[in-house]
Length: 181
Ligand SMILES: [Cu+2]
View (cartoon, helix red, strand yellow):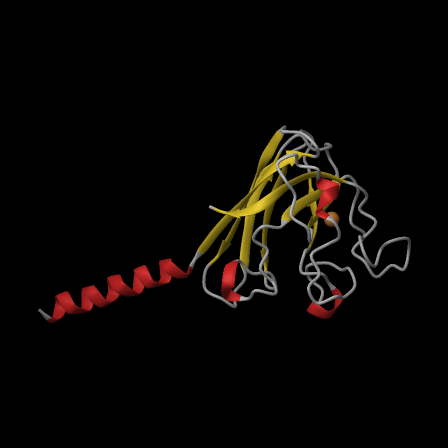
């Protein structure tokens, strides 16, 4: 009887842990079209560990380093990426890189992705500042658009052009809304 009780506690603990995890994904499209390019998954389990971001996106410019951000305004099903506005920046700080302290990067600053010679980019990173859902309403990225730009994000802080706001990453060329699922 005691063994059954221990097993029951263990199973309850497992289910309870699973309940706290949140899965989301962004289906990525070429800007202004319904041309599908790939999927990026977001996974948050126990906080404050962070959000695991993984996936792959195809049909990008081959052998390129391209800016990768979450922007601040929801987009609709026309996938007009420029409608996504500025970077998601709830703390109103300057642009930076994922490795920078929270006072020197936007929550939406995810750096760059690298494409291979076929134009595919694999995404794999853990972000320690963003969140999903009600864990932290300020840093929640659900409903916001994930963007890939046509140029390389310079990392901010260079003082050149729009380095402090956009990283001089140019126009967004692909985007998708981060949704539960
Ligand atoms: Cu951007």
